[in-house]
Image 1: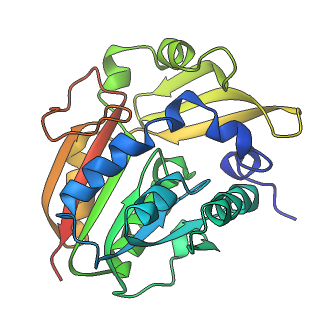
Image 2: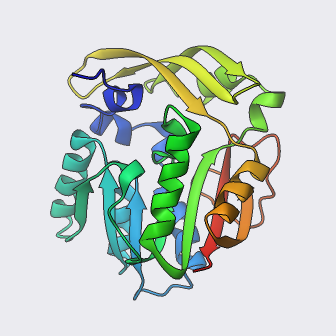
Length: 257
């Protein structure tokens, strides 16, 4: 049996605790931005890639949109389904690998938020497969909205210090960060307490991207009107120009064909 990748091990039995993390508290404001980007058109069909516990899918469904969520984590999907059932919402949550999406021209829009799979993969090629699958899943003129790690940030700041300041008293902790200037990958030891009280210590490896890379990747997949902003937790806005102070970037683009 192949050893599980760190992101698979991390999200195993880590759903309720994940929902309590500081970085998952901005759902409402983030969905406000999504609605504006979609011109409040509730006839659109949306794909939520790396949906996790379903917070964006559930909020958008409550607002009248049709959305499907996909994720690799069984525990996160189980909590998403449980939360949707409590709200009497019917949402398809599917266990799928974002690197091999089975959809072809079925969706009007796709979202991928809070590092929903994209920068977590172990190779650049795998990350690219995720964007390729999203492109394939979208209809012509379909829109993608996603966040990813801003490669400009670690050039000017310590990732370890930032994560320590943002984790709060009870959230995940990060240490021994090593940022590689040749690959723009940050390796660290992440420690979390899962939903059963077990402490996990994982060797993580995440890819940071600079804006020009994201633009090139999306252009190569036939996207246009590619725009990149600073991503403020719970307050996405087109007014926020991306700077070296932003830990994440917010990306929007439209599919050509």
